[in-house]
Length: 107
Image (cartoon, rainbow, N blue to C red; front, side):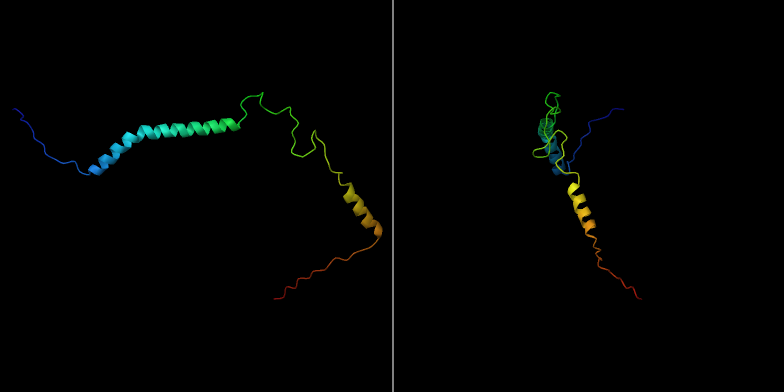
C-alpha cells in the first residue's frame, strides 16, 4: 500500500501574536544588555559608597559628631546646676500647693 503526496492548505491565524513574539525575541539581546548595564552601574555605586580596603577605613581617626569635642570628653557639668537649683528651692522653706484638678463623674 503506497502513500501518496498529501496537500495541505491552511492559514496561520492570529499573525499579530506571531509578530509580537518575533519582536520580543529580536529585542531580547538589547533588553539583556540594558539589564547588565543597569546592574553594573548599581554595583559601581554600591562599591563607591562602601569601604572595601582596610587602609581606607577611618578607625584611627579622631572624627567626632560633636563640633569641638572628641576623645571621650563630655561638655556637660553632670547635672550640677540642676542639683544647685533644686537645693536652693528646698532651702527656701516654702511649700507650694499645686493646682488641684477634680474630675466629677456623675452618671
